[in-house]
Length: 256
Image (tube, rainbow, N blue to C red):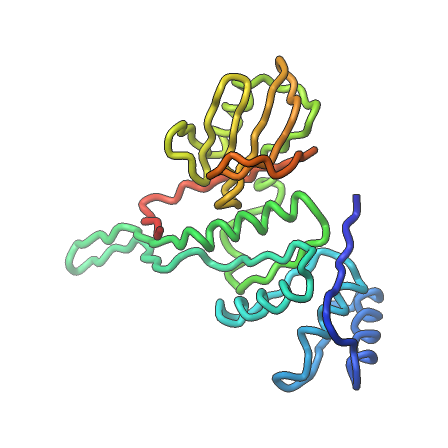
């Protein structure tokens, strides 16, 4: 199923905006690699670009030069596209110290980092959205070009599940261990799974409130449900759900 971008705004393009939208859309359709939209602060450039995104209707990457501007754009695009997948992808390090060696003191400095867990969740949400749907707009800082590797390699570490799929429960658990999820039947948090008979519950790395319940009938996935991880309330059935790799970043220190 092809999803479409639906722009929600209490106003319509005015002034130079309709002409700018037409020219930008035309340039994209003609295959132009570079186009420039000029305008002072507050003239509606984000709204103009949102209209272009709606017309072109393709997955879109918006790159900002710092986290502050990326956060502002993310908030604005979320308002314009409340029913589409607007995601946020920036560096999850609050602090990063690469390993180093100081020769004159013969000192080795170990790598250290502090990870922002909320941003880590948003990064996973962005990559998962790209596997699930095509109405995706990702707002990112320039750091998005580092760290993930090739899409082909990343795709090899995605577990994709559908109702009716034949896979043994133990084989499924092994696959989750392979993508660095861990079993924890007591402290059920992001990046963990728990097992109760023929039911496996997985807490995706991209979520902090909802988990996925996999119900087996023999070696077949009988039902996939989205569940509130705290209350156990069933939120709905899912036909398909992908799980992306949960990175183990040691000796990084998580910020809770």
